Image 1 (cartoon, rainbow, N blue to C red):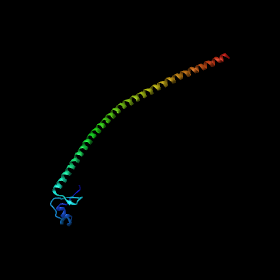
Image 2 (cartoon, rainbow, N blue to C red):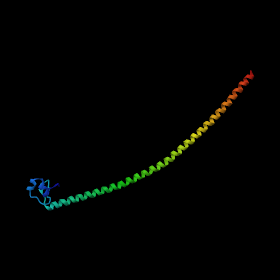
Image 3 (tube, rainbow, N blue to C red):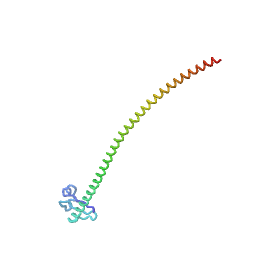
Image 4 (tube, rainbow, N blue to C red):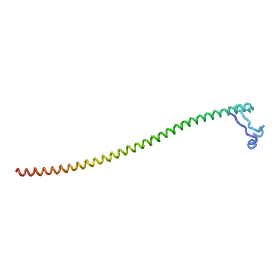
Length: 145
């Protein structure tokens, strides 16, 4: 039921003569919009009580939704905390893993350099030995002729 409140006497004096000409009461008068007739006090009180009950139900509904949202917010906060803890744990373990991999890479690089030096020394020795053998074969061929 839609209700329109008439203006107070003060507003009636300010708004115009049409409202002033009516018999204006000191307090607002409820008017039923569907039927366009004034409501008596009992109907008005029932209407006000009904509106108060609706507001109370609405407030209870809002409180219930806020409680649900509060619970969901707590859950979300806890999930964010868990994510932050997991991120910290992963960062710590990844830093250690990356450091271990870098150390292994450095060690492997040093080993490769040492192997290359050893291979170069061996190749030099083989080259010297090959040169010696070639010169010896050449001398022996000269002697055999």
